[in-house]
Amino acid sequence: MHAHLDLHAHAFFSSLGRLVDSPYTAIMTITVLAIAISLASVFYIAVANLQQLAGNLEASNQISLFLRDDISEASARKFAENIRGNPAVQEVKLITKNQALEEFQTFSGFGEAIKALEKNPLPIVIQVLPKNTLEDGLELEKLLNTFKQAVEVDFAQMDMQWIKRLQSIMELARRGSTVLSLLLGVAVLFVTGNTIRLELHKRREEVVIAKLVGATNSFIQRPFLYSGFWIGFFAGVAAWFIVAVMMLIVKQPIEELSGLYEGDFHMLFLSYSETAALLFISSLLSVLSAWAVLNYQLHKLKPE
Image (cartoon, rainbow, N blue to C red; front, top):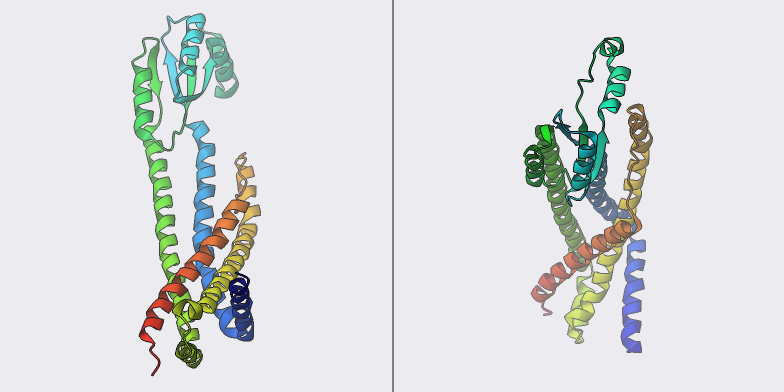
């Protein structure tokens, strides 16, 4: 067991030393991989920030229930409590006639005209904020139709078309990010595989001699697999720095723009778990690519 671990440790550090011995090739390969991985990561973060922004927009996706004029305030409060018990509802707000009149007088500019009326013409309004309004449009329509059929409701209003458009944009962004990540992942496989193939070709005589003295394919593969690991790992680290710099460049302008619209939007970065996943995936892709190339090349390589 100690001898086996010593062989792995030797291959692990010797593969790193070989990368250091050829810095130009290593830096070029790692840079290309880092750019590909960072592009996939940037699109992932962009979708995450878009989802955060869309989540903030959910507050505007309220269903407004205008109650019948003969519904008393007590009945309206009881109806609002029943709505709060609905599992599809996140928040309920009751606006009485007097509250609606005060808001109208304050913001409409027709305060004096309203005072001339003998009776408050505004109805009681219940504002309902559904859960997951950007994820399930069919359930949202069912909820709206349920409110329309309630005897207390005179009119229910919600801009369903706007929500459907936003849902389509979010789904398009998610699928686009997934497709791009897959394509860039394939690019990582090919670039790493080609790098390992060239390294194997450069060390062909060494591999042939090792085979002649009885070395197994797994023994020969070991340093090349560790080389693939180091390439993928350093590419993941470089990609993280590229993403961090790009996000820091756009962070302040975006948050200033959000502030101008009285928003509370803060840019999301890669979390600790997402950073670990980035390094793991980049290293794993490189090792898998190296393993596939080595299996193919070593079976073709026969000592004469």
